[in-house]
Image (cartoon, rainbow, N blue to C red; front, side, top):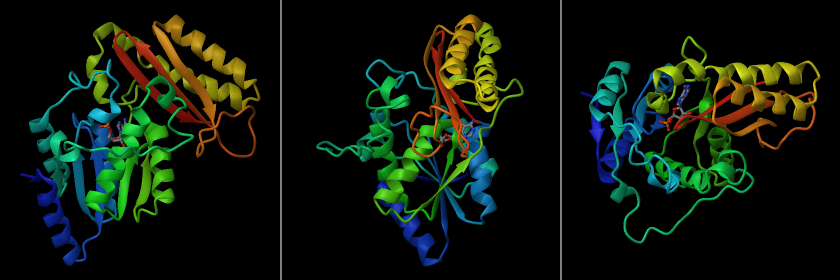
Amino acid sequence: MVQQLKTLSELRHYVNAAKMQTARIAFVPTMGSLHAGHLALVTEAQRQKRRVIASIFVNPKQFGPNEDFVSYPRDLEGDLNKLKSAGVDAVYLPSVEDMYPTGFATLVQVSGFNNILEGEHRPGHMDGVATVVTKLLLQVQPDVVFMGEKDFQQLQLVKRLVADLSIPTGVVGVSIVRENSGLAKSSRNAYLNAAEREIAPSLYKTIIEVANNVMAGGDIAQAVQEGKDALLAAGFSKVDYIAVCDPQTLELADRLGDKPLRVLAAAHLGKTRLIDNVTV
Ligand code: AMP
């Protein structure tokens, strides 16, 4: 059984003991319902021969009032088995009450990142992410944290806040793990019905198309518009955004320069909201 740390004091005890043994700690934060994408983060963490701590915490602060916090897929037993098979050393399982006790009043806000793309379409989401990641990094005190490029904006936001707050943790981004169809693995894919599963891979195909058009010197605004039209034609009900951005600041790009760009997208398919991104 993977060692379970259910409270902050259990975590602190574990971390202090690990540091006494001069173990270096790698951290993989998740919201559970684990799949091959999460396990790729664990594999990367293990390659560095560190003590690997994962966390499972469905963070209420990053869900809007009309979002899927209550219905978000949860499978603690399955997750613990997967983490054990993957060879994780310990899993931190804080409760909501432990993370946000009565009177909790602090919000971490990373300006420039909190009100664009995901932040624009999910008000409060990025602040919720910034707040919980800050707390988790201060609690776990890892040498390095592994996060997926699947949530590209989240990854860039964490890099920014770790630098801004002088948190002594390296941030490593891990490539997106996809299904054979190209669909990015996601816990929310469980919401898709059979017909939607057929349509869902067109999100990836479409943003590749946008990236190719931009690479070929096409007008960015036109490439984006064609991408949105393609998603709606494929059966997506709503496109929140397709954006071609600077990969660090996520500022919108108006032309292809010397640096690679990133195409990011979010779109609704039935009741499921999917996100994805590719490099240009
Ligand atoms: P989540 O449980 O959705 O909050 O994700 C936890 C971590 O796993 C985040 O750093 C995600 O970016 C990462 N992740 C989720 N899906 C994938 C994927 N398909 N490929 C790579 N990383 C992923």
